[in-house]
Image (cartoon, rainbow, N blue to C red; front, side, top):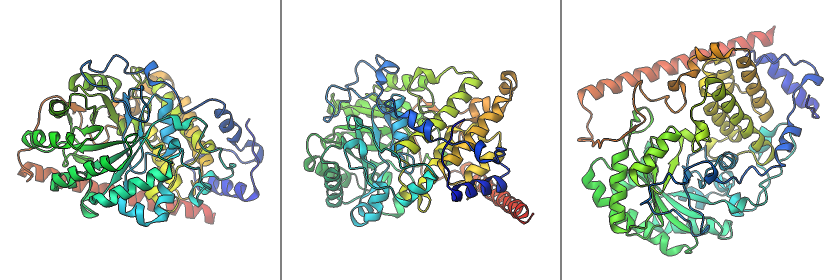
Length: 520
C-alpha cells in the first residue's frame, strides 16, 4: 500500500468528499486505507517520458514516396511524420509530454490571440508553457497548486526536453501585432521555439466575433492573409519555421486560386484540414480526402519541395496510412483522435480486444495524471478559476468517455462535482472505474455498449454508419440551407434543449441528494 503524509485539512477534505459523493464509493474510512500517489509519481521520473522515436513504431516507409520530407530548421535531419494539432484547453504541456511518449514528432501550443498576449500579462502567465523550447519554468500559479492538493511541488520539465520541436500558434489579423507577438515569444524562449503558425482554420463563431481571425479571416481577405504570412517570414529568424493551418474553401475553383498564393508567401509548410468552415461540431462530416490531395497537388505545382500536412477525418492508424498514401502529404496531424487515443499513430492502437482497449484507456488516464503531478500541472489557460484541474477533467473525460457512459455516477462526478478538485481525487475515481470493470468477465464486456466502435469520443457527433473520412470530392453548392437542412437544424436545436434540460435535472437531483446526506 502506498503511503503519504496528509494534512488534517487534506484529510477532512477527503472525508467530506467521501461522505458527499456516493458516486465514488471507495470504502476508505481510515488514514491507513487512504491511497496516496506521491511515490508512484516519483518512480515515473526514473525514465524519460518525453523522448521516444516515432519511427520505431509508425510511419517509416508509409509516407507517399513522392512527398517531400517535413524537416524543421531547428531540427535538421529529423523528418516529421506525426503531428499534434493546436487545441484550445487541450494542448497543455503534460498532454504534449504524454503524446511524445507515444511517438508524436511535433506538437503545437493552443492558439494564442495576439492582442490578449501583447496587452495582458495575466494572459501570458496562464498560457505560456513553452518549456520544451527552453523557457524558464516559473513559480506555480494558484490554480496549479490547488489541483496538486497534498502532493509536493513537481520537479518541472526534464533535461533534454528542449530537444523536442514545439510550434506556437498565433491568432490575429494585424501584421504588425502578430510580428510583435512572435518577437515576444522568441525573446521568451531565447529564440529556441521551432516555429510560428498562423491560425487560419478556426471555424468557431468566436473567431468571427472577436477579431475576424481563423477561417473567417481567410474567407474575408486572402491578400491580408498573404501579407501576414510574408511579413512574419521576413521578420523571424530563418531558424524559426513559419506556417499556416487552413480549412478547405467550399469550392474547388477558390481552392485552386488560394493555395498558390499561400505557397508564394515563403512559408515553410502548410497544414490543410479536410473540411470547410461550415463542417464543425455537430455538423462535422467526412473529411474530403480527395480535396486535400487537390490542394497538395496545387501547392507542389508552385513548389514541389513544400511539405504539406494532412489533417482531419483520421480516426485510426489505418486511416492515417491511407490518407498519407492517397494525398501525398508529408505528415499527418491529429486532434480529436489523439485526445482519446494518444498512441493512434502506432499500429499498437489497432486490433485491440475490448479488454485490451479498456486497459489501454485506463493507462492513458493514469499516465497523464502521473505527469501532471510529477512534472507540471497544466496552466489554467482560458479555463478561468480552477482552470488547471478543469483541463485535467477534460482529458480524463476523453480518455475514458466510453466507459464513463457505462457508469454515469462517475461521469457526473468527474464532470460537475465541485468537491472533486485534485489530482489525487481524480486518481481515486480512475481506480474506482477500473475496479468496477475488473469484476466483469471478458464475455460480459463484449456485450457492453462501451465495446462498440461507435461508443468512442471521436464518434460522439458522427451519425451511425457515417464514414470518418470521404474520398469523393464534395463541394458545397450554396451557403444557404435547404428545407431539409433547416429541419435538421431545428431537430438538433430540440435535441440540445432536451440535453440541457436533462443536465439541469440531474444537477438538481445531485444537489438535493447531497443536501439530504449532509443534513442527515
